[in-house]
Length: 226
Image (tube, rainbow, N blue to C red; front, side, top):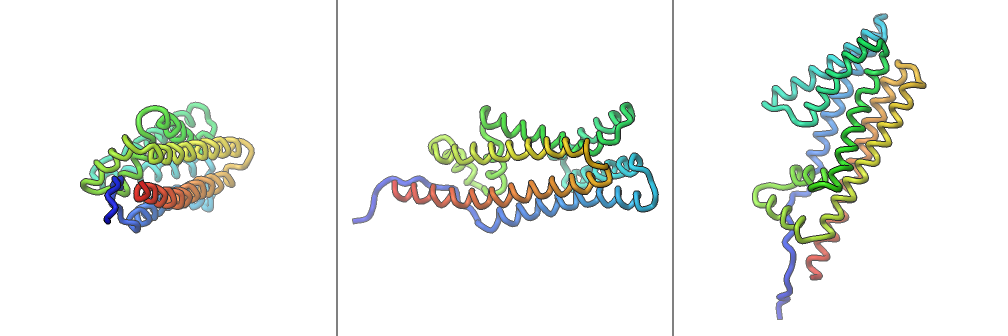
C-alpha cells in the first residue's frame, strides 16, 4: 500500500548554482580588495606618502563601486553603504589628520554589517534567509521558502543560527582589525586588513555552504519521515 502520510514540499534548488554564485561573489571581493591595495602599494613604491597612497586607494575603491553600479544599472544597498563609508571617512581624515581613519573604514563597514545581521535575528527575518532565497530560489520557489519559514521551526532556527554566526564573526573581525590598525604600521596594516577581511569572508562562505547543505539534507529527511 503506498505511503499516504503528508510531507513537506521543500523548495526545488540547483546544487551547483549556490557554489557558482558564491564563487562569483568571492571573485568580485578579490577585485574590490585587490585594486585599492595595488593602488596603495604601487604609489608607495614610487615614493608617495602614506596619506596620498591611502587617499588614492580609497578613490579607486569608490570608483570600483560606481563602475559596478553603472554596469548593473543599480546601486546595491551594501555597495551604497560602503560608498557612504568612504565619503564619510575622507573628510574625517582631512579634519583629524589621522591616516588610520582610512585604514579602519572597511572595519567600520564590517562592524555595522555585523550589527545589522545581529538585529535581523530578532526583528523580521534573518539576513541569511534573504541572502539564501536570493541565491537559491527561482520562480515559484519563493513562495515555498516563505511557506517553510511560516510552518517549519527547524527551517527558521537554521537561518537564525547562520545569521547569528555571521554577525558574531563579522563583529569580532572588525574589532580585531581596528585594534591592529592602532598598533601596526600602516604599510603592514593595509595588506593585513585585506587578508583578514577576505579570509573571514572565505571561511564564512565555506562554513555556510557546508552547514546549509547538511541542514537541507536533515530537513528533507524529516519531511519524508513525517
